[in-house]
Image (cartoon, rainbow, N blue to C red):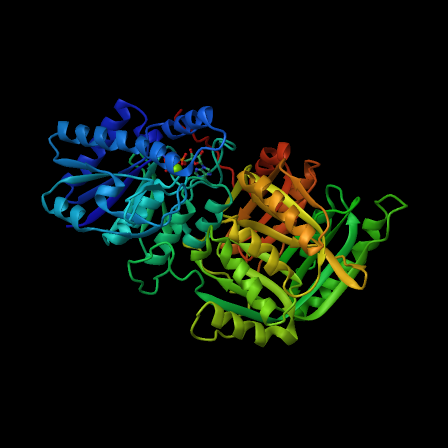
Length: 607
Ligand code: ADP
Ligand code: ASP
Ligand code: MG
């Protein structure tokens, strides 16, 4: 008999009526000849309410007690859903995470699932019962049997992990929107439904702020090949399928902490173009990349560093054969930009570096595990490789290095991450097929208002600096996104120094700043600057690979509204910009429109 795991989010079980509607749907699924395991969230905004209570008692609540508290929300729902099913004559039993045997690591408030014991669930399934499982929670298998939670939004992860462990036919995520949309319909009501999306694209969107799916749920679906669909619990519409490539077989142990890196990739045919001291004002990036797109030059990585004074540095990589064209555009545009800025500032300058290579580590298991990037930097440092540029995405970290260091870097990374076969020189993938041929190379736009930016001035430009810095953050379990090194180099006492900036989750920002200030004293770094009033807007789409002009369209949309871009970082399938916090929503709306993603109908989100 087919087995389906259905997960219902907070709004979908937010009232007695909603719970009864859920029970009806579950019964219908059973009557259609399926076995059903149901995973539920806490009712409505229950978890938020519990968090608030905790903070009324303590400004820094104990994480073990926090798990004890937050796990109660889901326990209410499982009992009520089970009763509602029984009322309909459907045998059902509710189980907590502990009763199922959802075994996690002992990390309170952010535990990862290690494995799921399936015997009890299977026994009840054989008795033709529907099993109603509390999402978001697990248990440690240490002596103490501690209750853990998986992190906010974690019920999605519980559901997909159960589907993987039970080898379910598919996993349905029921929520309050019709599926995965081109952006959050609460911010852009004209957002449109996406019928199918690749797990790579969804991983990026989810981790860049689209909370419709927990990124770790997408990671498990991708690693174990779980067919996953997001649907509305208000309608029978088909929703959005998340498509994963056929995975390599994996054991169902260490579910969320298996080997984080699947591949080491490299490309030796790159060149880097840097424009130093371009004016820090709206429209500059739009102008530069607009011109580059007109010349049909496809740029790979782009970074724009934090500004020093009133100028920025913008750097990008291109494939070596088109360097001449890129260089010509940059050189032609530099004087134009120069004429825009105040006379007393220094002149803009174009700098070319040939013979550079890009090395990347890739794998869905690096999500939320800051130690992975830190290990890459440490490995490169040990091999004596200096990093010129860093670009990160949720599933990939790329470093631009000297071509001469490439073989050594790749060999060291293979050993460090135990990646078997030495992969071939990988040129950028030719447009990976998006499932339904999308009309726009951009599939979705996301906004993350929960980020902060940290910058450290004048860190030494030599092997080992990034390793030290991100190693420290990793030790404190602080995940970093958008790492940017300034292209400008100051030589102080014979040591070249650069600024380095990155974004972290806002809730980690102050702790990170404090810790880095201490490190700065020890290592002789400059000032550690924190800006919490930022927003990160991102576009994601597999179809943007090898297609010039996407960055230009995004930057133009932002510039059109006179919004200044503070930071830019790209990976192969995403472009992210940091803007001032109060301009985040406006930037999101502008970009969504610019890529023609708006539909003619408004999406209504149930209250
Ligand atoms: P649940 O309680 O069902 O887990 P969530 O609130 O966690 O629901 O996630 C659903 C919400 O995600 C939607 O109501 C919507 O506001 C938000 N969202 C953000 N980005 C997107 C997107 N790209 N597509 C759909 N929903 C999105
Ligand atoms: N109830 C938890 C939360 O609100 C888990 C979830 O809903 O996914 O974060
Ligand atoms: Mg959710």
